Structure formats: structure tokens, C-alpha cells
Image (cartoon, rainbow, N blue to C red; front, side, top):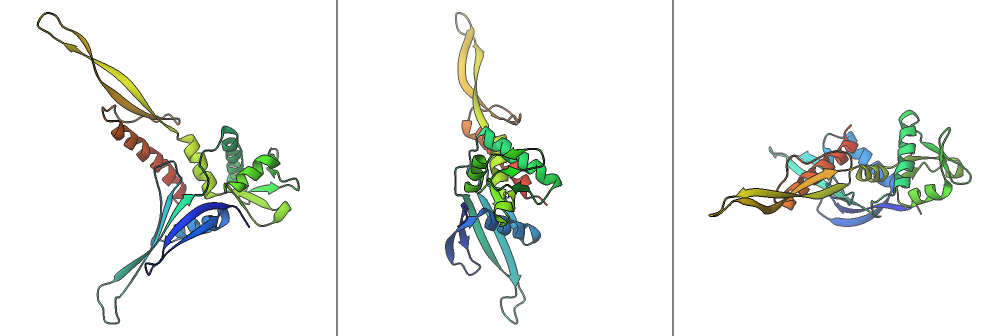
Length: 229
């Protein structure tokens, strides 16, 4: 049985709800299907959990003589089945394989020993096994001589590694004039948000929640780029 990449909370068109465990290949198929249709959408969350919301909408007359269209919606909320916190080595391995795929869409070859090999480089067998177990690689089903590609779960993991947010504190002082003499006095701290990619928030704020919200918006925008066709 293939490793689970996402847990999906699904609401069917008729309103019934169910939960499903999706492998990397199954999740990739659901996402690719949604990206093909104008009536469907894939929306990334801004948190570090790698959550996706997929919606399909259909419209039809409410009855044979109806004039106003009725709409129904199918929704799946995909939550990563494993912590989305790749190490530097795992990020570098995923980046190597993703770069190879740009010119070789079939992906890297699985060697008999279990390594994921490009022409001149490879991901060692133990590392490849960990990436497969996390659902960050999608095997093509060819077994020991098949290929692997970086799954959507893997690309989400890469993006979250590239965009790790940090909240900093800036001390502030102001000149206060007193009855005898003035002086510099401490003011409430100002918070700033930054990202490991080099992004900085628009302006410091005395409210940490505001600057963190800017950071989540930045991260969400970078994740959403994965689903632009």
C-alpha cells in the first residue's frame, strides 16, 4: 500500500461528508483534474500545514421548467499527513529532482538499489525512501526500474522551506519634554516580519498579529504559484 501524502475531508455534491487517505499519486491526480476545469479551483492556505482546498462547482436548472440555475459544490480539504518541515538535505534532494524534471518530465529513474538517479547525480537510497514515505515523491508504478517525480506535496514542502517566516522586534524611543528637562524614553516595541527568501513586511507595527498576517499572505501567495497553469 503506498504511503499516505494527504488526509482529505470531502463534502460531496449532495452534502454528504467523508474522509479519505490519499497517496501522492492520488492527490496529484485530484489536483491536476481540478486545474483542468474552469469550474474548479485549488486554493493554498497560508499556514505551515500545507493545506489545500479544492472545489468543483456545477450549475443546472433546478427543475425541468426552472429558469434560474442551481449550483452545487464538491469540496475537498487536503491536509498533509506528515509534518511539512523538510531538512536542508531533503530540500536539496527535492530541488535536484525538480530541476531535472524541467527537461525530463518523466522524472528521475529508480535504480535497483532504490536511489533516485538523474544523469550525473542521484538521491541515495535511504534519502529516497524517506521522501517516498513522506509522500513528497510520486512513483510511476514501474517498480525498481520505474521513475519518480516530485509530487505536489513535495513542491509544497519545498516552498515552505524557502519561505520560513520570522517576527522581529524593533525597540523604539521618543523624546519626552518634562517640566525640568527632556529625555529619551522607551516606547512600546514595534514588530516586523521577514522571510528567508528576502521578503520584508510593508511596515513595522505595534501589533504583532498584523505583521504576522502580512507574512501569511506572502507565504500563501508563494504557495498559490504552484497551482497556476
